[in-house]
Every structure is written in C-alpha cells, then in structure tokens.
Image (cartoon, rainbow, N blue to C red; front, side, top):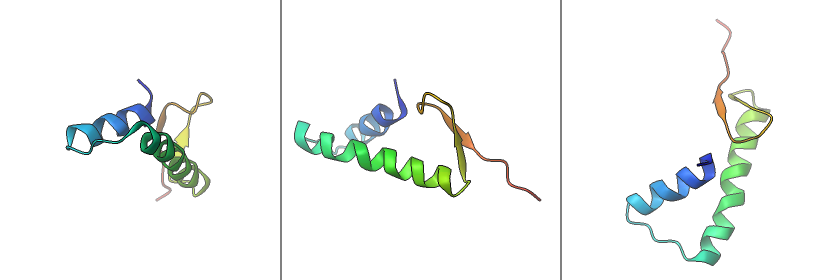
Length: 59
C-alpha cells in the first residue's frame, strides 16, 4: 500500500468518509505536501516516490 493510500485509510479509520470525487481531489494535496517537505529538505523520497524518510539534520 502506498503512502497516499495509507493516509486515506487513516481518515476512514477516524470516521471521515470521503466520496470518490473528494478522495480524487485529496490525493494530489497529500503528494504536494510530501513534495514540499522534500524541497525544504525535511524528508527524502525514494525514486518511486512511494517511500520517504526524515532527512538527516546537521548538528
């Protein structure tokens, strides 16, 4: 299961039911947030864009 799918699943577990149209609208926002965090150096993403991890912060 990809990360975006896990976010959608977590919303369902919390009682938020998304229609198909709303789910289709939400998915790009999740990806945009991850992409923004990557650009800021907060996370790193694998080439497949499905896996990410916190970036190592310099001390």
